[in-house]
Amino acid sequence: MEEKILKEKLKELRIKNKLTQEQLAAVLKVDRSTIAKWETGEAMPRAAKLPELAKAFKCSIDEIFEEDEKNKKAMSGGIRCERNFK
Image (tube, rainbow, N blue to C red):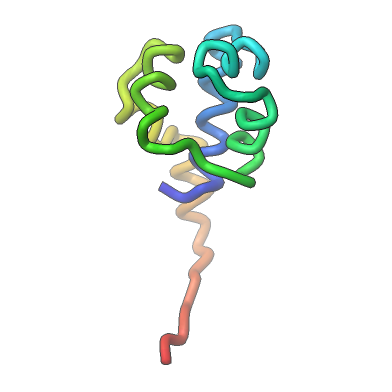
């Protein structure tokens, strides 16, 4: 999953569960700014936080990484990334 999709999914799940950034931060024992960074893509949650995130969102870790239909359509928009490796 791309970082863009993960950050959108984290925010979507937080809002769906009626949690503020402050409330989620308290549950996860991190700063509110950490949650903000995850949701903007500036940082990503550490693997150790994934079970706690899943519990806070009442879902599985897999569900956090699942693409929804909106994101699948956005990703299939015909944009290609080509890299030249030397």
